[in-house]
Length: 176
Length: 218
Image (cartoon, rainbow over all chains, first blue to last red):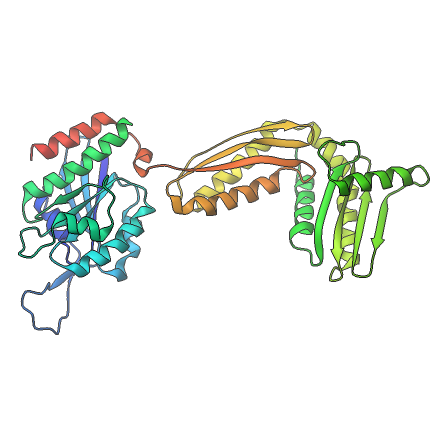
């Protein structure tokens, strides 16, 4: 049995890194170089154009697959395809970028129609000046029952906490 | 058995109602049944009753300056249409004549029909509709026939709130086409949404516990 969790979020929110931190296999990435004219060395140089894929083997029969969506608007047709049959999804937010918060609202709206459990992970909490959870919840107009978890996608322990939060939510729904 | 002929007759009636230029209203009601009828139906029935004493009545045309009413009288039914000046009288006459010539045999065959046949036809069409959309929901329906009215509920489950209104419109269209046009359609359509994970085959709490334990142990 293959279970599937979707990792979504805006461009540069850290989806590829999130999968990389927890996947037991080297994640399958579909990254392309970005042509940038800004000359900013810290700027992201590659972006996902189809999906990222990671896997966690549960036992001989069960595997958990992690699919990362492309973050750029022009690839949003992939979101619908990738959301088919998911257990739930994680919406990653770049806490250090206020523009990302605005764009996340559109992603949240899109995924409403998927009707699956989800959590929001406030990534890049280790970056100086990152928005705190209250600000993020407020800016995204997130209801209190939607879990909002601080996250640093570079750290496996942090990624684990996000996934567990989603899995506990799924578990609650199954119990109901 | 509801045959191909009866289905095409239903399509004729729906075509007269929806697609024929100048047709403002169509009506059909049983000659013998008096309950739940409107003032229009009652007056028409009295007129037909009064005239039938004197002549063998098949068709009545009532014409005014800007509109007209065509009425066809069959063994079991009174049917017709209210028209405005845009209507093509010859076309409407042909359509109502076609329906009138077949409706009694259609009605006789309907009375011999098992409700399950009608349920199966509706179920098949709902399944086709759902298969052709992104929706992978489920459906359930139960119908009861009481004289010339069909009641019951069609429950369809779709994966998202966004699909509710479109799906409801489609299912209502199917029901309207499949319920014989001379029957009062009292079938309600209920569209529910289902959380996506309940459609994952084989997903149990035990499976999920294994996943949680594995992640915790990483």
